[in-house]
Amino acid sequence: MAQAIPAPCEKAQAEGRQGVETPHATAVLTATIFASSLAFVDGSVVNVALPTMGRSLGAGAAAMQWVVNAYLLPLSALLLLGGAAGDRFGRRRMFLAGVAVFAAASTLCAVAQSLGWLIAGRVIQGASSALLMPNSLAILGSSFEGDARGRAIGTWAAAGAAAGAIGPLVGGALVDWVSWRAIFLINLPLAAGALWLGARYVPDKRNGDTGALDWLGAGLATAGLAGLTWGLTVLSGHLKVAGGVPVIAGGLVALGLFVAVERKRKNRAMMPLALFATSSFIGLSILTLLLYGALGGLFVVVPFMLIEAGHYSATQAGAALLPLPILLATASRFMGQVATRIGPRWPLTIGPLIVAAGFALGSRMDPAASYWTSILPPLLIIAIGMAGAVAPLTTAVMASVDSQHVGTANGANSALARTGGLLATALLGAVLSQSGDALVKAASIASLVAAAMAAGAGIAALILLEGQRLKAR
Image (tube, rainbow, N blue to C red):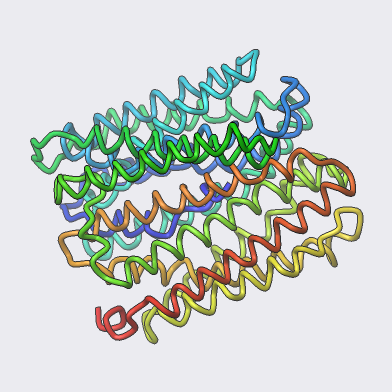
């Protein structure tokens, strides 16, 4: 559920676009908020419904991992291609197509009578999110200028944070009082509003780029991530080494071919390798992958443990997570100002280390104990650390590359945030397959692994970020 919190560089993607203010600014802003909320709400409500979905469809732990990863996989792999498609074919066209397909996929998920159809719907949701997300941000950035752009982006970011915050609570209530299928139907009015406003008021702009899209790169990235995800899911859930290792090897080969293709395409690549010319961008990429991987695992494991081992209702499990996005949203603005004054290197070192401390404390979570003394304290520490990292990460990514690659770098960083959550969820089979005390113990081990990942993110920032370069820019 890391995707329930706007990835740090999505805001920067909007800021990096230039344009004039549209005559229907409020309608355009509302359309982009509705569309983006589809992804944020859907990402946050699904995790609290996983136990109920599994019982309803007769699915085990490994299968339920795919309810999450079937969405994250195409979103991670196709996010950059979706933005390029908007530049090539028109942002409004791709925006409306993404919203319409997302609505259809949500309907498919709501009526699915088998796990296979549910996963199919989730795959389509992820692919359509890869269209609507970058193009909604591109539309937002090109429709405002100067101070108006800053206010619009702030409003969009606040709406995204609010959607991520209330999503688990609303989703839990729907699961408890209606059905898990209802969590997908709440997407339909949002999609209808985005489609009506988008078709009526959003201007159709493009960059005039007539070059071919990097379909080969997108295909190899998808195949590589799919191989890694499938193999890790098999290994973590069933320990079938003979089945998992060859699939992982195939995924690594596909990712190697992806790198070769991107090198050959140079600046026409979906992810130009010129981005990685500085140690700062390499360090930021490692930080993003590890930190958002740890966060993604948290949002899957904690509600699952609270429901299965602590006998929380879905509503209570959703409410248990509420303090994290609220504190993150309220503190991020202040930390952004701090990073502006002192540079992002130290906030990006200290923030993840605080997150690591929160996860280490989280290894002692006991769902049978008081929420206020066992569950809430580690969540608050993690939120404080994340607040120290999110805004500085946006600034640092933009400063780590030349001006020609700022937009692509932001998109790549957002894709890495999703990939971190994708791979983390694939590794959780050994946790989700447990019950009772065994589940609590497995979750404790997972929390210690997440602590190591977050600490690794902070160390990567300390070693690889070029302080003077980032502060100067």
